[in-house]
Length: 292
Image 1 (spheres, helix red, strand yellow):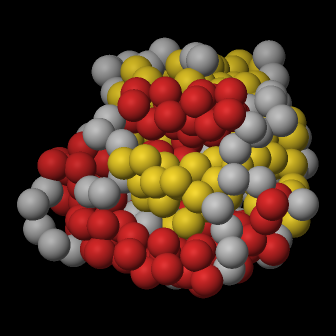
Image 2 (cartoon, rainbow, N blue to C red):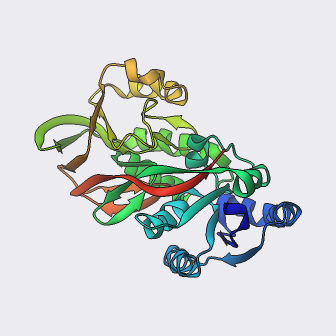
């Protein structure tokens, strides 16, 4: 059904350190080879991406996004709650939402799903009016995200690991106040992360059992363990084995509000998306996406 719909391919040319721009000609050739009618729009900002998403919706086009997770979150914010459909062509550094959907990291191969896949409804997380698809995290992750976004080093997916190692060196514990579905709690530690997909940082499965279609958020808190233990558990996040470590707690809910004893931003889908205090709510089945 969707293969017959015209496609607007929204592209962030600078995503993945220029990876998207390099792969775009091969993607265009793949779409032509599959008989897909499409047009290409290059974004110059997140707000521009939102404008383009609104125009594709008004035109009745299928919205394809080629870039990083930040681009996908911005577009999801415009398509949620509508009959618009999102197709994902992974072009960023992390491609975590594509990973969770089972699309892999090759945007050319993902053209098959755009042309002949099926629609699935997935949850969207909303933080103070802004949509995101992956994980919104604050605390040490705020510091690491700022470092990752500022670095000039060509590290690819390893940029997140590099940034975390640097952030840990300067870290001091924060006191957190968290209200989960109306139940207040407090703790001292590293971070609060509110997970929709459960994956971030280029394949870190922070909430390995998180589902995109269960109408729930997975809240991960990391308490005040030693820096040595924190760093020792870091490799385990890539397999999800960290959940058995001391200090790690995961709770499911539909709404969570949180703040700390000092200012932090909230990082989501690779970008700062809000400042504390913040409230996150799940919007069950709000987005239609193409999946294998």
